[in-house]
Image (cartoon, rainbow, N blue to C red):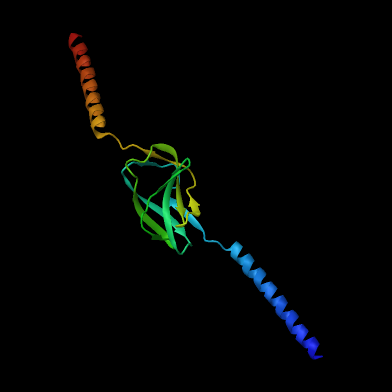
Length: 159
């Protein structure tokens, strides 16, 4: 009877350990940190040299990195470490020499490069408006309007 009680205890312990291992392995594969990018989400036009808030929500506890990707090229936005947990926002400046493109995606990665989130759609990086050219265009428009009004005035006077 002692042998059978010992065997029952060993069998019970073995079954308990197998069930515990199965539960731990399956729980580890199901429970993952959820990360979502809240800005830029896609469709925006970001100007080179301008500053924007990069926003996210995440359950990730450790440091994260903010990146932009166009094609196969990835650009890192933060040099330091940003802790990811919760609702986050970090200001970033679009590098002035970042290539112009319409297919950028925002990425949040772990320091070792594992992608946690990608923006929902692509967005554009555009050149800032040329204020001198815009001013020249405004002056040209005023001169054209003045010329038009002058012609109209002449035709009224001639009659």
